[in-house]
Image (tube, rainbow, N blue to C red; front, side, top):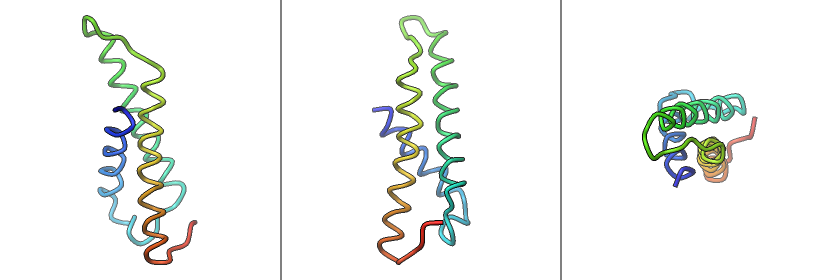
Length: 87
C-alpha cells in the first residue's frame, strides 16, 4: 500500500514540474525520490505519536521505492512512445 500511495505522490510531484515534458533528467528522478522519502519519513515520525501506531523503516523504504518506480515508469513510457532519450 505504501508503494502505491507514494507512487501517486511521486507522480504528483512530477506533474508539478513543467519541464518534465521537455526533458526529464536523473537528477529530477532522484529529487522526486528524495521528496517522497522525506515525506514518508515525516509520516512515520507522526505515527510515533499516535497511540497504537509505530514507525517502520520498511515503510520509509517502500515510500521512496514507490515514488522512484512510478516516476521511472512514466519516464520509460514517454521514452518508448515518443522516442525520447534517457539523460
